Image (cartoon, rainbow, N blue to C red; front, side, top):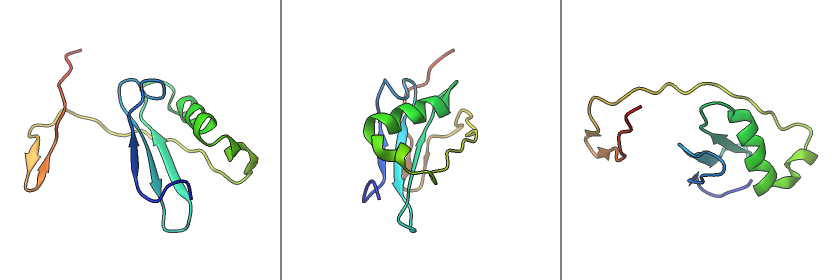
Length: 90
């Protein structure tokens, strides 16, 4: 396992306009992901190469990707939840 707790990585190199994450799973494995507008798989590989270079020695590590739906929030708060960020006009 890479980490004991969930980590959010804010790094302009890996994901300049978003973030990456590392999350331990119950089965002893670790889920690593990135948000990137164009090349999420390539950025994920860069992240793994820089942080855990021995990952390439493991033949059974699956790399998968799927889109994450994003939409503007109509409300940025709820009971015990507050979303903080700045709106970017395109």
